Length: 216
Image (cartoon, rainbow, N blue to C red):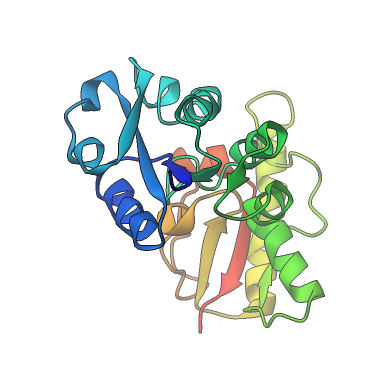
């Protein structure tokens, strides 16, 4: 029997991974929640393992259930597709601990790239060309975050620092949350000093602090 890859995703993403797996001689094992029992990605797979009931957090985003499903199916490979667990170091670490091979970056690489400020610094340290920007250097820990004592003052200090860095870099600029995924955490470009700054509240607060990048 050919080796199997467990596809830790759903929908069209999982179907594409399954086709690619079979093209290189692997068996495709799908996972599904109880609500997705009759989904196309399940029917397309060579085998399928139920992750149980509940929402995303209890099924497709549960590292423990995904690892258990891989073991139950006898899959030595886990392919996360994109989205869901694909950028979670926890999945890579769990695969490493369970003796499974993640089709993707190592947990160390995922942790290094998970914070966009740290990722930019790592890239620059290895000689990778980077767009000029400000990555929060000199900000205090947790500056501007929280609603408790000092929160408002910290926010004022952070805003003043961002304005100073924007002036240094020149316009136009884009402000991006350091922990956001893809473009979801990007604010609207700031065209000039007189442009209203994009508000980082409320959603990007979960991904703060912010970085500022010069738009070419």
